[in-house]
Amino acid sequence: DTGVSQDPRHKITKRGQNVTFRCDPISEHNRLYWYRQTLGQGPEFLTYFQNEAQLEKSRLLSDRFSAERPKGSFSTLEIQRTEQGDSAMYLCASSPKGGYGYTFGSGTRLTVV
Amino acid sequence: AQTVTQSQPEMSVQEAETVTLSCTYDTSESDYYLFWYKQPPSRQMILVIRQEAYKQQNATENRFSVNFQKAAKSFSLKISDSQLGDAAMYFCAYRSAFFHTGNQFYFGTGTSLTVIP
Image (cartoon, rainbow over all chains, first blue to last red; front, side, top):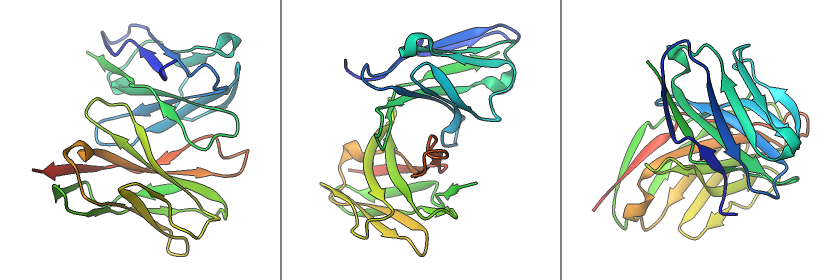
């Protein structure tokens, strides 16, 4: 296991379409996080999973966003009816129980045209 | 809510010289962690250094060290003997040590570091 993997690396979609991103955390990490990073800004927290339970969601996560982590392994982030404002880098990170810091993936860059 | 401020959008340093990146934060909590992350053009964020607020001693990792001033809520990163590979965006981040609020990081807006050969 070489780290946190995210797929796809890039996604271009038309406004109104649905998109889904996948994150595979480090296998022994039970905590998984999604962040969004827009140009010139630091990452902003979206949601957090401990195992399969989604324990925290940001107000940034509107009704069009949904995240899942079935079986506590990989996670998916779906955006429905995409808007141009959704264009951003979506970062996934994981950490072990009791760990202090995150290991980040390389992110998925979403462009909504 | 906690806020993290990086007032230097861009910095540059001559190769082999020393540079200091600034970070201030605002919190009412007494126990927390502070981090510096590096994001090279390849995009993956990498942990550079971590500081626990209860520790008075400044953290050091090889050429990277911090100046942690808890009372002033300041957390600067010093990079010594700068190398071309240090060129990246650097983010300061805060995380609460309390279970109920410690599940997310608060990031600053970043400092873009250029290393001049």
